[in-house]
Amino acid sequence: MSKNAHGIVPVMLTPFTPNNQIDWGGLERLVEWYVDNGADALFAVCQSSEMQRLSLDERLALSRRVVSLAGGRVSVIASGHISESADDQRAELMAMADTGIDALVLVTNRLDTGHAGTEAFRAGVENVLSWVPRDMALGLYECPAPYRRLLSDDEFKLCRDTGRFVTLKDVSCDLETIRRRVAMSGDSGFAVVNANAAIAAAAMREGSKGFAGVFTNIHPDLYAWLYKNASEDTPLRRDLEIFLALAAMAESMGYPGLAKTYHTQLGTFQSAHSRVTDYDITERHWAVLDLLNHIHEGTIRFREAIAQRAGH
Image 1 (cartoon, rainbow, N blue to C red):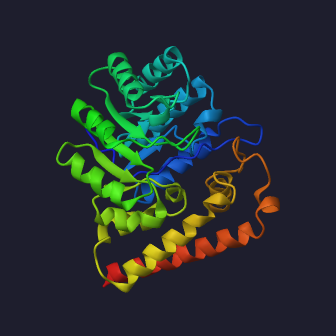
Image 2: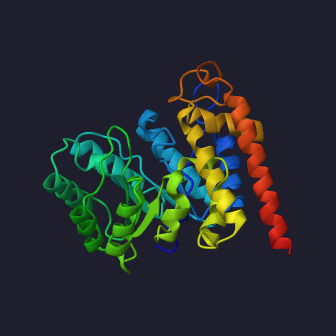
């Protein structure tokens, strides 16, 4: 790979028009917003992208367009790994590998669809290695859907020792697991990137190479500052760490529709339409717009505090 697949890695949204088509203009504005707000890489065609609700043609078109829009400024990784059968997985992964991405991200539960264990996982990895080009860098994603399949230590080492894996989106949500995985990774180049906001700063201090959680769709620049300053003992860092953890608890209030609503307020999207959040979030989640306003106000205040410190 010519670029990294770690740091601040937004899990990209897919904007839709009100009539349920991909909004390519909204996607262009979104990519610019990510780049302007501290993204080191973009994770296209992931769960936040609603990949389970995208056709194969849509997944491929989305990946190609993100690569084009990024224009080499940041690396682009993508998954779209959703199928059950080996034949369908082979077709989708080989096609995705041909979209110009910097790394192809495999979903751990698709490598063991039957919950069979390590031998099934090993066979899944070996299948993919036999399918995709030898120069295609790979990543792993412990995607929660349709079930969260965490890597065992032996499985982590298996992937590390292939020399092909460059990133893991860690969804263990456990500091001890992250600490152990970072140690196992060593100098192999297999980056462990935590995705849980509650432990974001602590995981960075333990060696997580950045952050890839859902609130990279709200304030990726604040996570970028935190990543650079995670170990400093200052009130600003401590207060930001708490704010980011608490703000991210809003995820349960209709995400990804929640983040799409936020981007309509920013002007990134014209519509908050979502194939996953197929209801009105204001009816089900009381005062959710007020909560979003508080999160936005807190984001602005921390940006001002960071800018003020930088000015000194």
